[in-house]
Length: 249
Length: 249
DNA sequence: CGCAGCATTGATGCGCCTCAAGTAGAGTGG
DNA sequence: CCACTCTACTTGAGGCGCATCAATGCTGCG
Image (cartoon, rainbow over all chains, first blue to last red; front, side, top):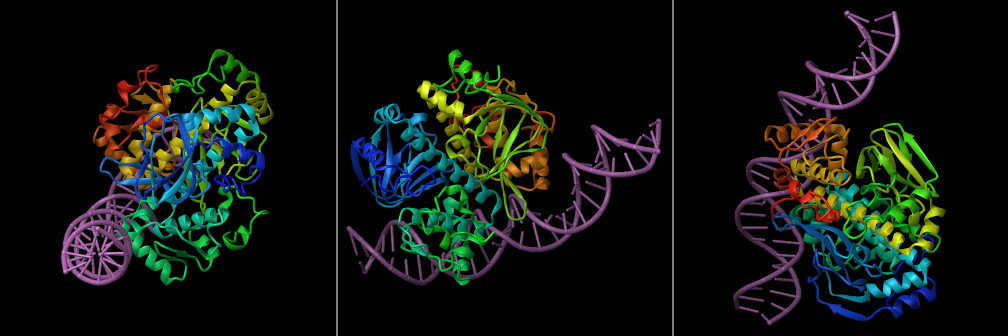
């Protein structure tokens, strides 16, 4: 149950029932976390990793003045800091955005899993590389899109990921982020995000509220944000993903 | 010899002689590549990965109008597209920036290596996660730094990586990038990069020429670019790295 | 009720982009 | 040896997008 969403619908690597059971068995603890709390600090030695079961987590780097840049947003099913398993120490902080539930898996268990089941080990590796692919999409977003494109791109990505987690129907989903969060994701100020959201609303592209995001026409939003979901490695034969989010090429 | 620089000076994972020999043995081909050529196209199925021996390679995503955003720059010793091993297909293109020499390692060999030597497999995984950590630093750069900071940060990073490859003495290194390349890395126009470089020169922070980059005082440049090399996971006990590049905290 | 956090709006200014020339250096052919 | 060309670099003028500064409104909650 805790691992239901992990790697679900990912092309070629979704887990077998046995693999899921093996992972479940290695969970030593399930925690409920308050919103807006730091979960892991950069530079600390870690002996476990964290699977996100419910809620939204973020990874971020802050500058000298305390301004944050988010470098990742995690949704249920993500193995948030599996990076910490090979790396031992993280280069960034991890924090909750909403209230969240996480499952803890000790690195010693991962050692055992990899020794017993190399195929599953490969899938764990794969999952960290999806995170890297998402980092690259974010680089594109920050480097080449204007403010409206950045917000549109992020919302398309989040919609696509939440569809895979069965937390979006393709047109609407709950998210629980503030406008300031969006600003820290998109490299903007919260004030400008506010104006961008107004424009997206006026153009009928997207209605963003902290409680609920609505996307009447995902294809149009995808065009505005130059969003192409290939980097998410979703197996489209297993979802109805393509009907709702892909940009016409 | 081809693998001399791979993971060198990385904390806790540098390769043993046996491991290097095993990797060398799996190289099936060594290629010399012309500058400014596409090496790998996004979306193609791959059955091998590429170790960079000499020269500079880039990874990039381009937008609808053909403008590029570079998402990575690779220096000798980098396992450029090891990501393609678990992922099978890349989400971005890979191209040479300068003339380059690469060693090809088939994925079938990597399968064998991982089966025989799980420790070495772990190190390969680690190396892909360093790339991800660099992606995150680039996100910080694009999201939170101004133009001068971005260029400064990139040059600090490149200096640090080239020190590890013995291709920089800490104050000067050959790079072979144009101002337009810098622009595609930093999310700027080449015109503005030109003005930024002039200012860096006038302030005595850095002299950038395509042939040679000179950094009189790496610490000052690191301060300007808010550069902290922790994300490169360099073992400072094995290098003189800390003497030349670290920003005072 | 009153506070705290989030959202909204306006005014102003700067950083970087865009458009437009013009220069310098490296390689090529007559 | 010098025109020719191509690419990289340089400089200027003008404008736009987003940041910054400053209020004000809204909502939930102790």
